[in-house]
Length: 510
Ligand SMILES: Cc1cc2nc3c(=O)[nH]c(=O)nc-3n(C[C@H](O)[C@H](O)[C@H](O)COP(=O)(O)OP(=O)(O)OC[C@H]3O[C@@H](n4cnc5c(N)ncnc54)[C@H](O)[C@@H]3O)c2cc1C
Image (cartoon, rainbow, N blue to C red; front, side, top):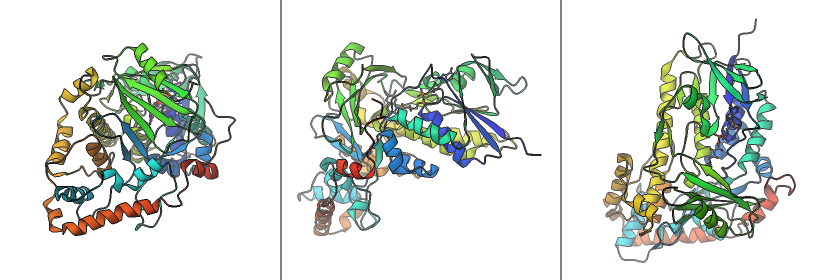
């Protein structure tokens, strides 16, 4: 007789629900696990989320998804980084690229050589002129990274701008064709096991019931299972990240689509611009403590490059996370587990990280809840991701020079978490950058934002003094030249999309 399959129930069919379903469909043995996804068309999804991180490439290829097809079906464009405008008005806009600045040399990281040259009084370029991805982004170029490790064209990675609604629909087709059952309906109640107190079944308004051994809560901000039923508390970070609202509105593409996201600081938050193939996504993330909804809406409408394609949509959120993402037999993935504002496009990454960690730590089909260490490890990784992302986001706010604007004055004066203070002190003292083996963000990302926001280290590594300054000058000049030469014959972003993944005009949502 065939062994019983472990029933897994996913509640919610937004980006989180369908990313989870698709990954489980591919990576779990179908004879040991049965996956059902429940969603409510009437409730719908949050419907925003267009900028991603390079990790999504790894996720898609882990599922065996063809990139060109995925890009055509989601109206996607390429993203080489994020441009930050007006966060520090005394400085020019900077790009946080998905790529390296220079290269380590004689075992010493690039920023030390760059600072040494600066300190010597010789001419030195701004740090971003030593980044191939910044040069390609500013020039509006795109091509795949080179496999030749000696070429500056091998020093970058890329992500996508995509239509998150189309991505969820794409993954739904993908997951259903691989055995995931989808149920449409609205949850009315949750049944528990009388002895253990674990979740046992969802009851629907229609009267149906869905039983499960493991429940994945992808119900969005509602967090019906983890927050609602199991009562896992919310850890509020609004004193550190005061933005709690957004308006979002699409408009037509008025020019070439840039291969980067733009985040422009404004009176009480920042404006996003995300170019897709069929439209531009725009939004204003702001703090309701410092700006009225009406003023924020007006600011957004006056900032967009062409007439809006729809009425602006208001969104409300609370920055923070649940104290635990895995409790009893319930794991929260997506907005049900936490939310940090989209300044560095981290939410879809957090979904992906949650799904991958869950698959790695999934309870055995034969002994579903025997080992609390699996749960504790999942929660440890989840905390780590959130805390690191929080610190990185806070850095953008804290190091601003927008004096005289209430939000910006507040964030410049706020008490920082010890973890961020420590990172900033290390950089200030000796240009030392965090080096993570797991999770976000890389050293180059920290370098981009620290320098871009105007934080200048007092010293660099003394090891850099051991090299002759002439040699450093020559090395940096050669690197900048190689970058410029590397851009030769590179197609523009638009040309590349035309030949690789142009979406048919019809069938795209606005
Ligand atoms: C302003 C803003 C901008 C953002 N921008 C980005 C970005 O650029 N990049 C990025 O990575 N992320 C971004 N995000 C985050 C991104 O939108 C979300 O991480 C992503 O959409 C995942 O949402 P979700 O699937 O968790 O929730 P949702 O999309 O809200 O889905 C919830 C699901 O649960 C179902 N559900 C809820 N209650 C019930 C019920 N009672 N019965 C049955 N079903 C139910 C709903 O029907 C729906 O299917 C942004 C978020 C906001 C708020």
